[in-house]
Length: 99
Image (cartoon, rainbow, N blue to C red; front, side):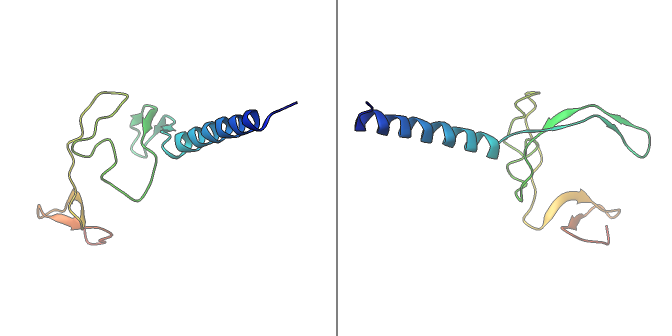
């Protein structure tokens, strides 16, 4: 016969395992299959961080490190730019069609 303590312990252990699986899937890295760009350049398969709405938690962002290559990020983005340059040397606003 299962005691109340055994039942609670099983429930706690299952809850912990479920939480760990859930957390791991939320922060999972994404594998990008190799492909050819439209200009014929071959891009090797690689991992990237999971997509989300933040640019500051990407491996290329300053202060972050890519766990697969050990490369330290150096990009830093302003609040309204993504760091790309237009022909005049300035930063393009996010969602700008003029750059």
